[in-house]
Image (cartoon, rainbow, N blue to C red; front, side, top):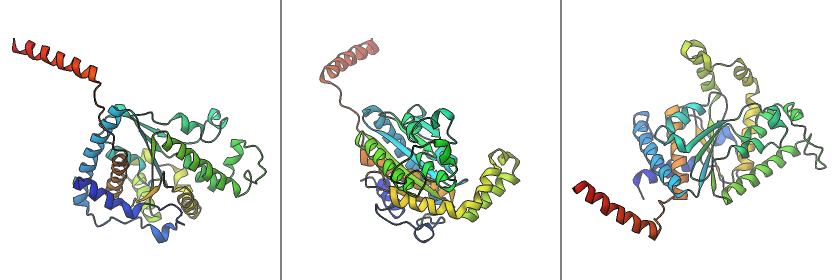
Length: 303
């Protein structure tokens, strides 16, 4: 095994949520954890990760059999945009698509809650990134229950419309959908960027105090801080109920951006290594044709 791959596998193992685990973020996952890596080391290690990603992506596209969906979730200011920018800096942009899911449109609300995400899935040979995702339906919708009314869900005999049963049902539906994707060749890689409340406050202050960052500031994001504990509980239930054998969650510490970017690259590289895409062997007929064309080209260049 490439030493770089061995390092990355070891780096992310403590971040993986074993299926069936009852997660308590304050107990199990330190937002400031850095895995013994220093900031000066991280730059070179991230460069290794980006290089490996580029190699795997090229093989993924050539094989055209598997796709990869990277799901990024995190509280406001957790660093999702910056993580995408740095981790994907070396890959071919033609084979990557980033989708950001915000408040659903009228058309989207006229369908089931997974519809808009199904429509945005990457095809074979491609890498798709969901910057926020279908998990908003068990996070922001759970914290703000009034959003359920807009979804116009039909009544359900199991209490899944108005009571707590709806979340158990959605966890099941999400798990089943992700298993369906994996069975059909779309690997689902899930990362929660775990940011502390104190670090979020510092990042919001930077957005206010630096004019070049003002465009990032949203008063609504700041107001959501009053629901911090509610979001933490929603994240904990999400991680506990939807980290599966076929699509496990990784809780990536986000207080240090340099580490969260490195860890995210490591998770993605490890997932691609598991797929192990290969360049396809040429058809024998094509091989014969290439041999003839090669001879012709050599003769042309030699003339």
